[in-house]
Image (cartoon, rainbow, N blue to C red; front, top):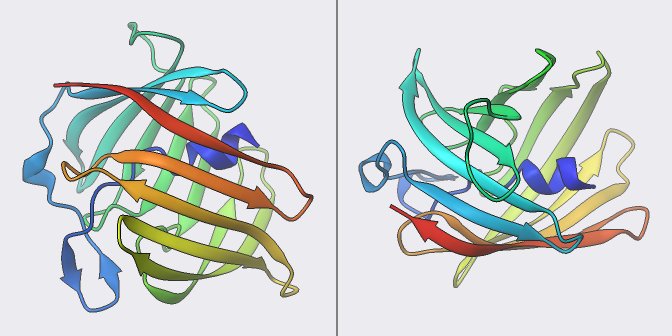
Length: 180
C-alpha cells in the first residue's frame, strides 16, 4: 500500500497546459526544495526536487526524516507532471507507459511494468476538485482497484492524499513541512 501512496507524492498544483491535462508550473520549484511527509502508518518520507534530466523532471525520495546521500527511489515525471518511471536504490525500475495518468482529467489508460517484471493495465477517470483532483482507477477487467482524492498546495506540491483500495485497505499521506 505504501508503494501506491508514494506514487502520488510529487503531484504539483493545477496549471492547465492542455484541455484535458493538469500541468505543472516548473518555475515554481527550485532544485533542492523538499517536503517532509508522513503516512497513516507513521512512516516519515522526504521528497526532494532535483531538476530536469534528459527531458524529464527528477525527484528523489528518502525514507526517513531527512535527505541523505543516497535516495531510496528516483522518480521521473514528464513535462505535465505525470509519472514515467521510478528507479529504486537496488536498481530495479517501475515504468508507466505512456505515463501514469495522474494529471489527466477524464478517462486515461496506462500500462505499469513493475520492478519484478509484472505488467498491469489500468484505466483512470479523474475530475478536478476545488483543491486538487479525485479519481477512480480500474484494472483491465473493469474492477475498481483504487479511489483517491488529492489536495494540492498553491505552490504546487501535494498537501494531502487519501485513498481506498479494492481490497478495503486505504491510507493517507500528509505534508508535515515544506523546506525551500
